[in-house]
Image 1 (cartoon, rainbow, N blue to C red):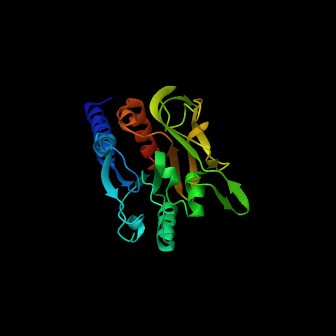
Image 2 (image 1 turned 90 degrees about the horizontal axis):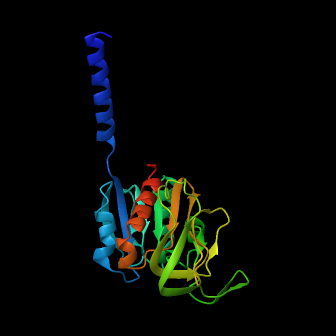
Image 3 (image 1 turned 60 degrees about the horizontal axis):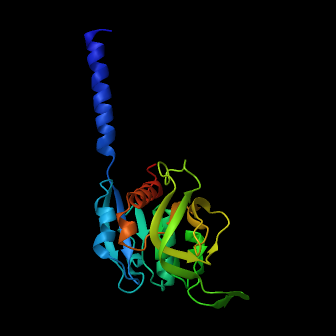
Length: 244
């Protein structure tokens, strides 16, 4: 190989790879809270320490105003950590439009019970948590259950999935949920064998053109600080934002 060809090859490789990395901008993520208490500083540190994302924290004031106007929307991924119940029809349609455009969605812990008066929400996230005993479409449902301060044993059901890749079975001191209904087409990522917990505790699904991931754990500072939990959340965001 001539010196000129060798120099050209090195130049192409260098600038090719350099260009690739330069184009890989951080995912733009909005983390939504409201309607439920949490340890703010410890929770936000999960996202602040993630250098692969540019994060905005949005605390809802009237349950769902983030989705009131989306003409200047610029987020790649929505992370829901809220438990607000109401969402107007306009805001419902706007959220559906975002999902149809491919905006990813990661739902953490108590956000399984958000927007509980909107039936479509369960199809979006893959589950319905029953906040109270109620009857719907002629079927009686008992209130879902929870228990705080439990050492939960998690088993990785799909170690090859981008969300759980590199994660082995682990334990978190967290809060159990049980008695929620599931959509049949969820792809199970994590299960839990601990008494008082539902077996299915993390999954992915597709809704319109959006990638959806739900992770049941995430109650308090002990989980927030866990390297395994942080990795799980980071990889869920990357997958939902289409960066595997």
